[in-house]
Length: 191
Image 1 (cartoon, helix red, strand yellow):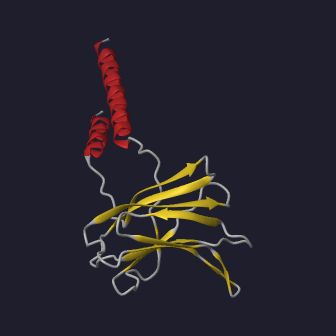
Image 2 (cartoon, rainbow, N blue to C red):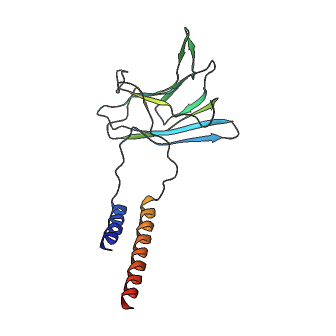
Image 3 (cartoon, one colour):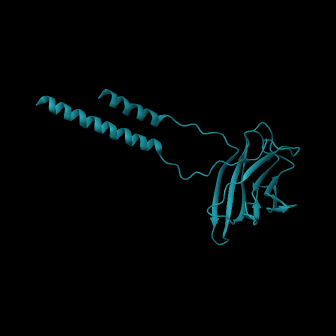
């Protein structure tokens, strides 16, 4: 009986412990289907958790495994002072090349610890299901990559599941069962 009560208390305590999230460079991002255009819009904010100022970044859209590209890039938007350049995925000299959204600001970048958004790109997706998340690369003032290789954005997450609430409900259920069991035990001992 004491073991069951301790388990219920432990589950309740676990519900109260906050979970820590990992720091990311790409955050507050979303992917939406635009019905009238039959296109997708990817919107995102850049968070600079590096030690360098970010003057430019690229978003890379893969060509795809087949003879036709998976993406057709339509337009991009960026906050004031930032310029955008789009290049379509294609085959250059027999090699499949990524499509790319290049965003840059030659005057002032995103300082370490700051964030900037919202950036967006509208594109057609020719693959099955929803589009895959593109790769990102951050560039410093001399145009070199801050990372060794491009990285993908964190996965898009659906609405958060209230797990602590679920665990509280489970713990309450276990406590209820323990009380019921204890009550029945005390009734049997009185007989």
